[in-house]
Length: 267
Image (cartoon, rainbow, N blue to C red; front, side, top):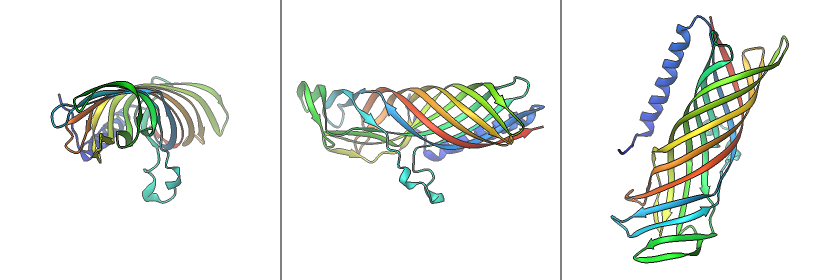
């Protein structure tokens, strides 16, 4: 099965899910809706990339245990039209009144993944009819991969939180999440000199766990720190200008975020 959705379709899907979550909340006798926005930094495990195109090109090889890094772009924070350039988080959720401190959330985590250039790693497989099995300098012309618009986690999360402390103004919670979703990503790549500027599409799946501290202020606003661990599996990434090549790889990510949000009590 081939998954291929336009950015507009996924954006519309996200808005519709948010809308129906709002309807569900309103249908409850009481509860709390919330919306949050923030920014993140992340680190990645080493990953083995399998690159293959035996239709319009002649390669089928693996680049073993490559290093990758994020690309924060925090220097772009400032203008309102540049808010989504850095690595950001957009979450909408609902806390149930009948099940205290239990909730559901739809999260969009915009991370960025960049294979570090000019590293020496083992390469095995076939390239242009030649078998290779040796340590190789992986420069940008030989291979470069980046999910920088980005390595996007669209997940549905189940949430629990534990009250830690409160007074008339502040409430402090320890909050945990368990989620799953899709990688709706934008991949830019070069393989053996063949450049692909990339486009948005569903490229795989992601599983994640989150834990953090939330500080409610006057019950209507909150600040939140979040630590996320995720398992990402790219199974449907295109390579080459003709998008015939395929990329498959698995990695773990660890992310830290700082978010600001507001609560909307439903009565």
